[in-house]
Length: 175
Image (cartoon, rainbow, N blue to C red):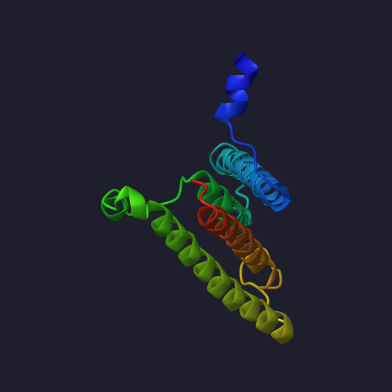
């Protein structure tokens, strides 16, 4: 009996693309979570080397910045999927129940458009940086397009999550 209640409490994705997109987004969310631990360990090592051994890591702050961008980009789609994203409660709470599905569809459409605009913009930036051959300044000297790749991936994931949310809203499923 309890197994039946658990199955009812957690609705399964109804068809193949739903499960595929949800699985990909959840996997990237897990990677984002793992990056929190990686960054934490890197900060502990950097602080220990600086203040205990007086031998600071020169590249640590720059690497943490790159990892933070990756963490946010991989986690944004999972936050949208789970409904943990920022919402303007003042507006959302005042929408009549009969218009809630329309409001959800509009929200997902707005996120989809945002993700596509940012994704195309960053893709253009990456293309330019690769063609120009620019390198970052600082201790980690890498081509500037490399740290921008997680933004494109994150916007792709965000677009997938928003498209799935829009599709589910149009099908009448609450998300």
